[in-house]
Image 1 (cartoon, rainbow, N blue to C red):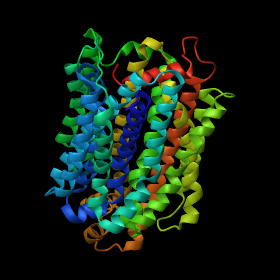
Image 2: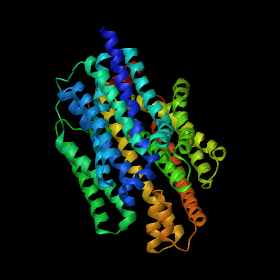
Image 3: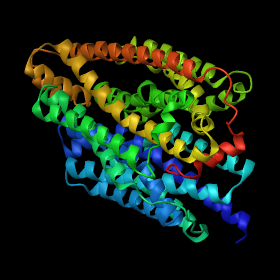
Image 4: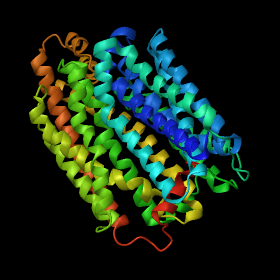
Length: 507
């Protein structure tokens, strides 16, 4: 096989892997009521269906990049794909919700390994404009998976059942593995220093304890010793991580990068889609299917209105970048997203698609503007020799931020629903049930409340939540504009050079 052909087949394999990752994220949200019906589980355990994947993915992304550089990008890429495929099969065989959540965490580990090693391997075989085009195709593949994941999952669930949705990322990963295995060459970084184990352990522990505490709070109360202990442990582990990274010779996170204002602005921009867009990819399917009684396929069509603009708007952002600064474009997009959130918050449960479509499209289009610039900005705001680490930090902030945002927003929605239902213990338990889509159990806990009243309480709480998220998005827009306004510094590389940053998320 010619060298050019091998490169193209490798690119196809990495694009397939990128396509499968958003399927791992969006699919379970669409079939969460079906998973609950089959495996049971408490509200906290059901929240871990999504958060286990996001936590393990975000917490190990930089570590996976370091392992790929040190031990071989092909090896880590293929092993990551195999783990995704294996975990997908385990999800369909799980005897209960706890085993299911553990398999989801394993799936996140495999996805992190495949993403980190796959992008690093591509950077070794493509140069210049070819490298830029290759990574652009990866971004497009991820966007296709994000945009079409909900409607594909809805069709699979309607046709074959929820197990087919769980198997779909594994099938895509197996296809990528079969393509890559015969054409991918092994490569390593001879100067790689290996894994920063103390930094990895402390960082993962901090994220895990924070997520655990936030998810457990609605059930046990924020003053519970378990919750207070988990949150205090998260603070201690976070402090330990900072202390470790300041002292080791080759840190996973170079804290001196935080002295660069534009770098800090990019990290804030990376977190913005988490609470302005990504949380809706989980909350809305639960609302549409579990509470409003829509079919999985219908809910998928609703979700396409939200995520579809991601396929188109980033291209517009790239063209606008020739005339406007990144700060202006990103801030404008976030303000549009905030307007869409406010609009959606005024739509009552059960509203038809034509009433929701405008708000959903506005949110997706607004977040699509900074989405098209973020990856390039992540590496263009630091000197070229530090671009790899900057990319790793950016991707970690983005993915880990999504997991934390899901936990916080879920806890906030539960508290808002409980406040609408009253101060009783049964109201608190019913609020946890309704926010995970278990309407029947919520009604059983509230014998004096009918379905219409419960949906009205949920709708009011959901509207309040979206207004809060809109406010946070507006604040982020202002801060991002301040940090990213004006011209880029002189050390920023050209677009072709910027793609070097994707060589490894942990370099």
